[in-house]
Image (cartoon, rainbow, N blue to C red; front, side, top):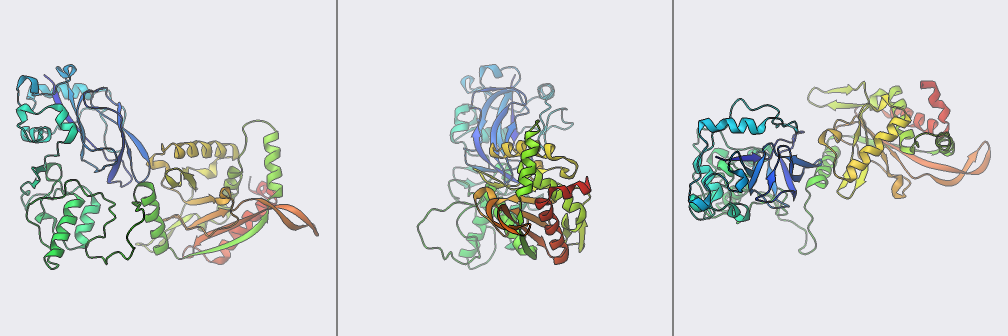
Length: 492
């Protein structure tokens, strides 16, 4: 006899609490294998294909493309075991049977099914059967599959086409959990929103699966409190909006001033990669007392050196790789800039390694992949790693680990045809080197006016980690290496 197993959105790591469904890769009724990707989701850091740890027949999908789901919310259900080949879950509607929980002797099927899964994201995987298994409650299965009729007559197609999670029934919010039990909240964003507005989550009725309290519930309570004259209290159970409120709604939050933006125009939600970049840049401006210095440098000899390297045979060396090699050499001389500030301990933490981030523009927005241990790579190795990460960034295949942990960032904005910029430090790093375009300009060379390949270099740094002398020394050393690449030989 088949069982219906529920697969929830797993923890994708790096503190991520939600993801947006980009593309479903399976339909209801499809047969899936263990570790087969079933949905592509977008987090604030990357796009990820999520594999299913169960093999069987898909009986339901939760969430349409474009919907945002919190970690732990149901993604889909799969009928596994004997009887799944008939594309009918437990409690086949055609036979009039009711949905039921699996018997104790059937639990071995789940263990058998989940064996052999080696596909592990962060926080879940099925390489070994879990020691404890959640008991499947009949009432939850019935409410999750029925869409207005009794569980005995609920069809599988009804689950995918519009059945709401068990937290709602006919537009009403179900009874609240006991106030002395644990608060059913997954997202720390929801907890913070409630805490900032003095809202007691124990007084709320969750509209998510199993009474899960969503951000929409908190915002509903705050609007109700504002309508009652500012008193924060749990609203009466009653009709809610037909669909969940998106995390990044354009409506002003409760307690904030009305928007001064005139009506009309196109509203673009700050979500996903663009939202993450906006949050990080805003935090950088709030927390980091930055300063910028810049210098023009004659890059003619650097360009000649690169041409000679590529003419010698072997893999081509990129200009970005040469600039990265110069950066790592400069950071070895000025380690103050390869650091971060621990504000709680009031300490500057200097790193003994260089994880070099580089800005990459993609169709999804600006991302900063990180080259691990850049100080230990030569120009050829750096070229290969830059190419690999850039390709992954444009394809949306960067993992959260490849987008975090940087200690210094190199930003080549010259590819956009501009000469200079004042970069914003990539929080929590302490500095960023910006490189403009390399163009022919009049330049005094060996006492005579000549046309040389000139580039503008700019360094934005956290003034807490060093003073102008250190920042100027770093930038001057970089410029000297650009003008005379042989200077690097002293550190090889």
